[in-house]
Image 1 (cartoon, one colour):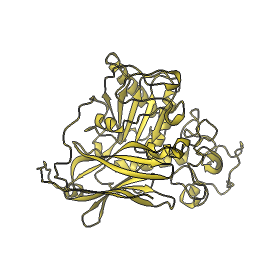
Image 2: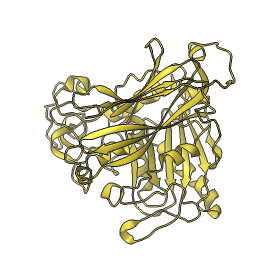
Image 3: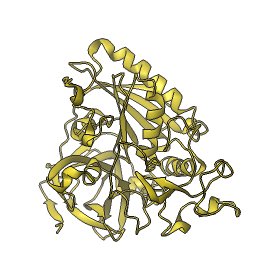
Image 4: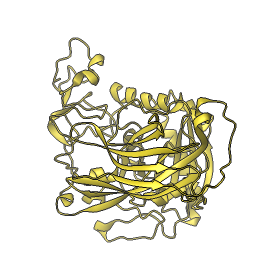
Length: 426
């Protein structure tokens, strides 16, 4: 059984700086960020959330008008309610804990994972929920906080982890998608190489649609963080190094899955830096990476496939896109419940296909769609996706969410990415 955790934060007040309330946003929020650190813990069949800390960070870089997440995407979501019960802010997200729950280890072991969410800083008392999507496809609270915005329990120091650098600025953070790269495994002598790598990765991203046509709606920043050692851990080859974020290959037992579990440190590194997408860029020549929706991207910089892998992981992290491949070492046998319609915008079980890309199908397209030359250049319903060869369907024969050699994102994935770009910039 999963028990919500109630934490009341009521303390003596500390005066906050204010700004003139000239918009609906400014009447409800300061232009600052409230960060909630917590732990997600459990096993394959249970999840609990444990409060860690609240932090006051300087700049709110998110939209000041699109405060309610209309997509419905994510395995979890954060919800901020007014004292009267009005919804002020929501945002869906996914977690490393959720992925770990689908592994064999989770059947025999309980673990805890760091998690952070950010939201605009409220002017008045609010209630914050962390909610989990369960088998009924509805969100249920697993953590509830009553937050007094002037309490001294909120941490207000500014962590100094790295040096921010502007790479490409096209406008106000509130009106742009803000991508922030953080250096991992770059020694002091490699900091300029890190900036060169950020430029190279960014330039490649904007060769791909729909990023190319929306480049003017993106900002890119980098955070230089000096690492004692170069590279990253590679446990299967007995290679261990000392790096700020303790990144490592063989995440969740998958050799090429490159992860960090140090979410609090990563959030410290970007504190005060606008970041709709946080990219941990690793100074490594090996193949690998990771992308988790509204959580992070982890990518290596110097493998021959680093650029396409980075773009694939951006699809996960920015737009909640599911993997469309099904014939690899990745094996999450129960990752998708085939009796329900998954929330991911680019896969379907056909349980409720009307809510997916049915409107994009030409009348002549058969459902399911045979993966034969006649249909391969059309939007269809091709069987095999999300690590399963049967019962889960993807919208294109080939796509960057299926294959690094695909020409680009399919129309359905592009539509999902554009939906998020619009939500973050309008």
